[in-house]
Length: 33
Image (cartoon, rainbow, N blue to C red; front, side, top):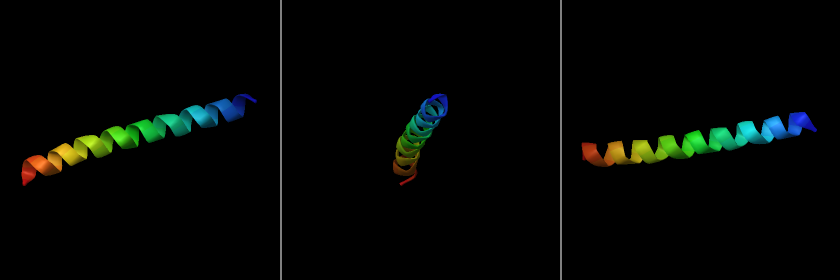
């Protein structure tokens, strides 16, 4: 199933981007305080 692999890869990429963005946002929020 190629579609399943693509869906899994997209989901993993989205989770990775969200986690990275959350970490950057967390650092940015701490700097503002």
